Image 1 (tube, helix red, strand yellow):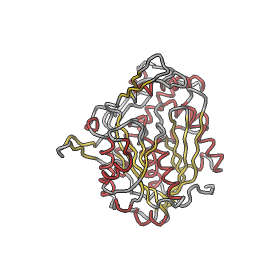
Image 2: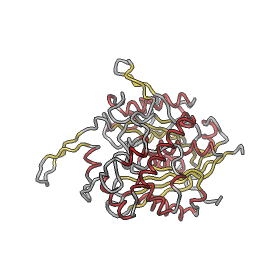
Image 3: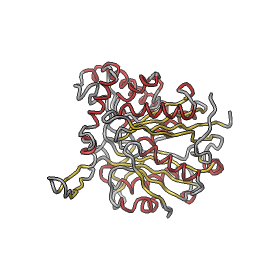
Length: 402
């Protein structure tokens, strides 16, 4: 295994202090009826309690979400009250890169000695997403309405193209075969259900109860509702919405939250349920490709990151990504000359859904659990974001007991 200099050498992720809700598809669960920010804060409080981490150990909070929610103006201070600890913090967003970006920013807070224990809390609710009304004095339409989720995914103001069209453009550029895309999708579903049956995801996903304003139960969030087993025959007969893109080979809108902590090496050993596990930050990059070719940008970010760190794909123990389209993984496999069967062993957003803000945070948590189960090693996380951006990061898991 190649040795490399670490980024944010002071920062660590304490093993076992994390957790994610399940990601039910939009409009299928009680999450469609709540203030998702408040729910996320209360859920973080619940998860930290289960992990035996006192909320008083936190001294800063970084939120990540992309869809407006009630009282978003108050951001982290309001959510901190739901976590039951009055601490400062702030909110950030970068479309689907939000979940990873929030963790990187938390690491920089720790590394710079600004804060010692930073809570990362990411969330989004696509159900009943708000519609904004914007005055546009320089436009022919003096007042414009925007449905936050659907209009943004359906229209890139820089190009006029939809996200789905980007997948089609990228598929054509890289001469992607529909048969391979369907085969990859089928394999991704098998990975998810195998991981679910193995029990590994029990260390990641936390069943959470939703209460109404009277404190009465609205429902349990205890499954990735909306995920169903597919067959290859089902995928084959689905009509193409664009080249190599069908209803089955793209993700779906969902609701959810995910949280983890970033702290110092000393504090990580104190807070972790397994202090012998050391999780450090190796490197991070972003790249922007040409317009409407978003699906190739993650591969470009990974290529840049490997060059920067001196590592290779052969050094990676776990490879996991945010893949809203199956085309993403096929293109990555071509550009990195890497077998897509080795990616996303515990499931991925293509299967379990796409609430944007917490998506890559859940990816990180699943990847770290997998790496720990394998005895440690380098963990590669990557994904795409609106604006044809790719983001990638490498973490390192070391088991001091081995």
